[in-house]
Length: 565
Image (cartoon, rainbow, N blue to C red; front, side, top):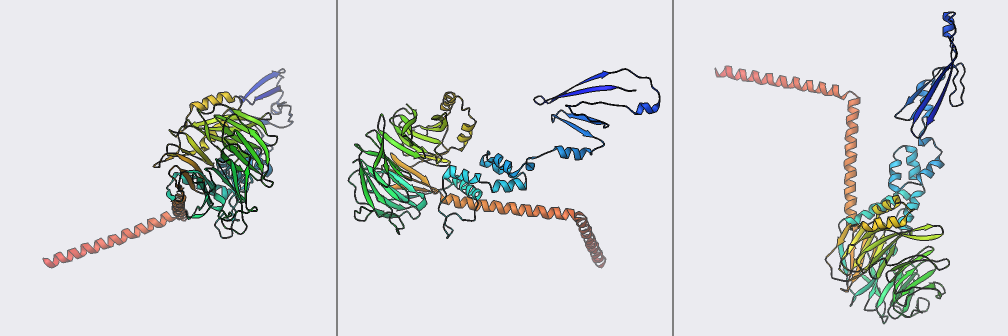
C-alpha cells in the first residue's frame, strides 16, 4: 500500500501552537505481496526542508512551546537535544560583557553566581568602575601606609566596600562638639579627601578643624562681615559674605593642612574678588571656574587662574544656592529652579513654583542627574534631569516632608541625603528605592508621572533630634555628618563606630558559616565512607560492654546475697 502525504507545519511563536494539516492524496493500490507493504514511501515537506530515505518523527512540548525534530538513524535523542540546547555561556565573551553592562550592581552579583566563567567576567568587568564613579566619583587617594584603599583591590571590591560603608548611617554613632565660634555658625564644609572641616558664621572668622581628632587647626583674621558660604578643594579655599567680597586662599606647598589662614596677606596665597552688589549666599568650585551667587539676583562665573569674571547669569529673584556639574549649572532663585548650559550659558531647563515660598537649599548627585531642593515649606523635592531632543528636562521623582520648619541646607553622598532645618532636626534619607522606581516609570509622559509622585510622600529613614533651633548648614562624608547652627557650636556625628561593630558582626557571621560548612563536609565524608556501618559496629560494641558490666553487677549482687545468707 502506497501513499503520497504532504504535511505542512506552521509554528506560531507568539502562542506557541503548532497547526498541522494532513492531506492524503492518492488511490489505494492492490496489495501484491508482504514485501511491498514494508517498502512504504513518505514524502515530507517541513518548512521547505526535504529529507529522503529517512524516517523523521516530531514531538511538540506545549509547556515549553518548542518543536523537537530528530532522526532515529542519525543521532540519539540525548545528543540531538544537547546540540540544540544553548546557554549564555556559549556566547562570545565580548557579547556576554555587553549584556552584563546593562545590569544593576545587585543583579550583576546574582548573575555572576551562575557559572565560573560568568563570575570571572563579572568580577573583572569595567562596569564596576563605572558604578563607583557614578555614585562617589574618584576614590580616596591610595597611600602606601594602608590608610586608604589598597592598590591590590579590584573595582568590584572597592564598590562592595563603599556600599558596605554606606549602611553605617543606620547604626550607632557618637557626637563630637567643636567649640571656638563666639556666634552662630552659618556655613560648614567637609573636605573628606584631606579630613578637614571649614566653618564660619556671624563672627566673620573662617576656622579649620581636624576631622579625626576634633581639634582646631587654625583660623583666619576677622573678615569684617558675616560669612554665609565656604567652598574648598585641595588647591583653593574661598569664603563669601554680606559685604559682597570673595576671600580666597591658595594651597601652600609642604603644608599638611593645605592653607595658611593666619599668615600675613600675600598676593601669592591670598586674594579678594568683588563685583557683586549684594551679599554672597553660595559658592562652588570646579576644575577651571569659581561660581558665586548673591542677593543681587545674579550668578557670576570666574576664571580660577586669571581671577576674572567670565559670565553673569541673571535671575528673577534672590539666588540662594547653586551646584555646578560638568556642562550644566543648577541654581535656585525665589521658588524657581534653573538649569544653565555652561557651554553657551543659555537656560536649558526651568521649573517655577516648586515650593510654597523660597527655595533655600540645593543638592546634586555626583552624576548630576539627581537634583534635590529644600524650601521654606519644610518639604524636600527630588528631581531627575534627563536629556531629550537636545533639551534638559526636569522630572519630579519624590517628595519628603520631614521638617516642621524651613529646610536651610542639604547635602548628598550616595545613597544618603541629609537635611538641616530651623526645627533643630536632621533627617537622613536613602534614595536607592526611589531610583529603582524612577527607572520603571514611563518617560513618555512626564506630567503624568509628576502628578503620581507628588501624591506619594516618602518618610525619612532616620531623624536626629535633641538640639536647639535653627540649624543653618550641614555636610556629609567619610562616615560623618557635620552641622552648624544658631548655638554657635559645630557638631560632628561620627558613624565610624557603627562601621567597626558591623565589621565584627560580619566576621563572626563568616566564622559561623565556615564552621557550619566544615561540619557538613565532615558529615558527608563519613556517610560516603561507610560511616554508618562503623557507627553501628561501635554501638554494638558498646552494647556488649554494657551487657558485660550488667552481668558482672548481677553476679556481684548474687555473691553478696549468698554471703549475707
